[in-house]
Image 1 (cartoon, each protein chain N blue to C red):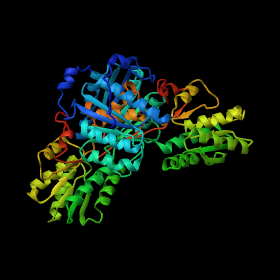
Image 2: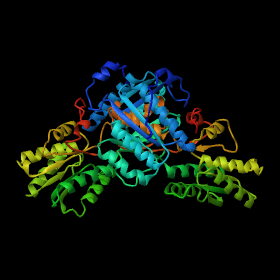
Image 3: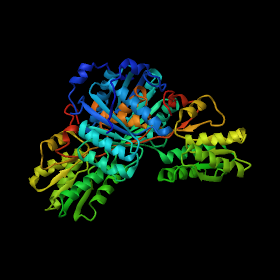
Length: 317
Length: 317
């Protein structure tokens, strides 16, 4: 019988002395440019960016960070200019406010030889960034649809709230519809709630007045799920239907942990992906591993069993 | 003018005290299962796995590793059984020896609730692993083809050596052909060299005897490029053609750094991807970031300008 080889602990001295890629232990300044915390999800992005930076600064002496939050695309463009002109960044991690106005400015950063990581919202031109980190939009819809299919084994009537009309929303909804196809689940109403709590509240009020039987709601977003829940509560129809949102909002995750029956599960689309992107970009300077590429984070189903690992009580989202 | 916010250095104490995901700073044992170093690329995999483990053990007190190298699929299956039975691993990082015989055993590890990261060679069933890390095979062919197109602006005659007949090889060759389509570059010979130096030597000898004019060779792999180079040298036709392999073999990278004219560039398909996979799996236990998903590492063109960052002088590959 063969025995497994267990690695002896290496000392830091041995590590630092190890020859290897030129980048190992090189000092580096990483710029992080994100939208300001104007709504729930970007609030989470701000929290997780700060958290990743704090962790990395504590763990590694050779890393410096510049974090800038922008209230508009033009502010974000000027943040990039400042990072290049006054802070001499080596790498940029950016969650673009919007794709079109940031494409040229990010390209200029890349053209200066900086390592560029783009998060969530792609640029309008392919091939600018070295690393792309984003969520899985078809997976987000498919995982929700599979839950509906499994839960509603005998079919039933549901309503769907869609986000802002975008490619992202189309991908999610198409995958959801494919997942429930042939299940006996009937979508009796589908309207855009624009990933907005108030819009979703109004859309759901309309659904409630039109449909005497609603067995479930795919709210497709946690902000919308909050608006839907409020409308259902005001109509006194809470026991009648379950609601599934999505993203990983902490109130929702807490409810799932506690066995909430109205919102029993969630689907992840984590603002913490900004942390993944910052950690990976940092690995370029502390590890000896390739990080260039395309990283699509999964959208797992969050249930009472696994919810704790997705719960960030200190995050605003 | 707005000022950028520079993060104050956080202390380790503050970090450890920070509330957050349940996983932060949790201790964990990560099993790493890879093929033995039977040829060049897997030699690199062994080196980079060990390097990542050494680095992580030095950087983080809460991580333990079990590294096992297998000479056959059945040895790898027994490695997994040992890791589960005697080492109580929390996570598994595996580069499967072959897809089919490992699919069931890896599924059993996942079914026990362990976090599973699969590298390079996928399993025969979707959805088993939490994280998939692999190279970009279409990109590998496309980037090589784009180099040929740019370098051979007036067209020319080339020969191509293919790998073992597999989906991977088909994806690479198809993307290469698309990239040179319409460029005036003519593929006058294309044969399988099976990612093997000796086979490639024989294929190239045949090409050399059949074709009086060969302007370039896409060897599509560094082992094959070594065989091709030997055949070209023995035929005394070194000045006539350039050769492009691929993977990131250190002798080739060194040549590119030094301005070699016969093998002027390389395309990355890095054995160091095992290190990326180990680092990411570890991040699950030291960071507060999601890592589940699908990460396809890029295949950048390696030129004299950027070769140094891909050069690992201590690696056997």
